[in-house]
Image 1 (cartoon, rainbow, N blue to C red):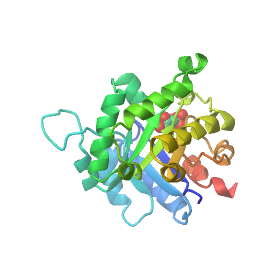
Image 2: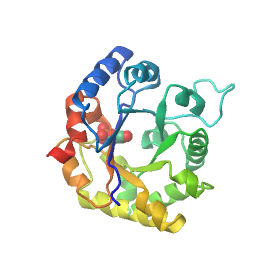
Image 3: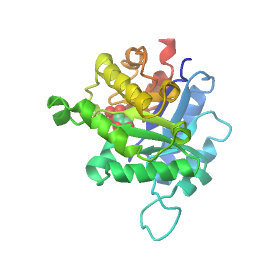
Image 4: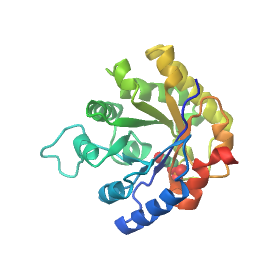
Length: 253
Ligand code: 13P
């Protein structure tokens, strides 16, 4: 069975509400005939609600870029899974390397966020990936393995069915230095193998694994041609309607 390709745009800390609405209107127009690829966008929190309204009736899904594990309470600055659900988010990105690098995210806090998101019926894009230093030391597989074991701790088979894993080597993010299709494929294969071992052959077979890190309209096709690459988590190139649409339309190249 071939997995449905999944292309998601992570806008990070970009776009005012007005800019976000402009972009989403262009995307709706340029992607309205897309059927065989799942598409999601993750605007910053301030733009989520207006973008959600604008997306009504469209097949483009909405994602939050993070969330906190409690439902509500005295947690200044945080957003709960319930709040994301309410405005029709289908996904939450969790464990992005920028969260790990700049905001003290650990495998344990990633795990708590993933569990909370899945409990509330959100789907999760769970990010893993090594730094340049870790790759140069030859421990990239070990790092990814540890992130998977830590991030998915105590999660059962049922919950895993709502999970997507994004492999994002930190050295390829925003650097213009994409992993070669072969470099990406070997880690994707490794992740699928690990999931086979941790869960079951069926779970591993159905799991979608996205690649992220300097994905562009120019390199998407060669990445998607790989057996275990099922989609992309796109940063910079998702901020522009033309480049993101061309990435989503990789099959037409
Ligand atoms: P870039 O596509 O800008 O390298 O960002 C990748 C990323 O971090 C997506 O989450």
